[in-house]
Image 1 (cartoon, helix red, strand yellow):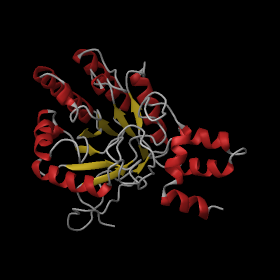
Image 2 (image 1 turned 135 degrees about the horizontal axis):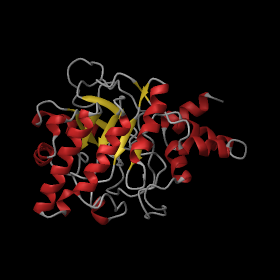
Image 3 (image 1 turned 90 degrees about the horizontal axis):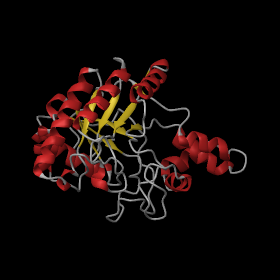
Image 4 (image 1 turned 135 degrees about the vertical axis):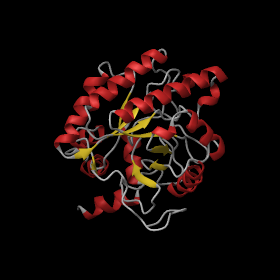
Length: 309
């Protein structure tokens, strides 16, 4: 299948390894908990658990080097490549639901170095700071400049450690391609493998592909990845925080049918709350009923579960 804006003939993604699946993910644990009491619902959790999903790292990781080392060690043992999300930029989320992050630029640089040290030269994909660039308008000009400098340093550090680094570029309906291209250049896109789109959002894969191709043209042909974890309904009616009626999107793959799209990824863990909105728990908290609804409204999940019985 070729997505909108597909480039010529399909070629393999530079991410040629199989993506890592966490055997102890929240969905896997939920499936085990429901196995006897709610077998039909457990089957939907099994579908989510079977997909490779990113692991997020931030100020909750008190031993960033050790935590990254454990994840990449697990992936190395299975011959797979993990997807990590670096989410510790100072003034994260502009003080909103996911507020937090490192206290200053020096602390952030140390944290990033810890992540790089934890990789120990093993292959990994790093999605660098969701929303940090697209959401930088909340900062003063001097603070924006400092943020872009921090991101440039992070790209260089992680790339030197051998990671495939994708700077986050928001989504297809946030910042214009021309403005985003300017911000990405300031943030070190020249040293990164590319950029990420739609992280934790709900816009369609086709919309993000069209936007990504336009953005890529302004950046000398940089590649990109798209978060499809929750975009199966392709619209959230302008909402971004735990909107109702959503569905899982296309399963993660590095075979996208587009030479610019390196992968479709589940960067946001399906079932983790966006924040205390629309009945959800705090941001990042596992919310099994939301995860179940995403799977129940997904054609792929429904088909898989039905064929298993």
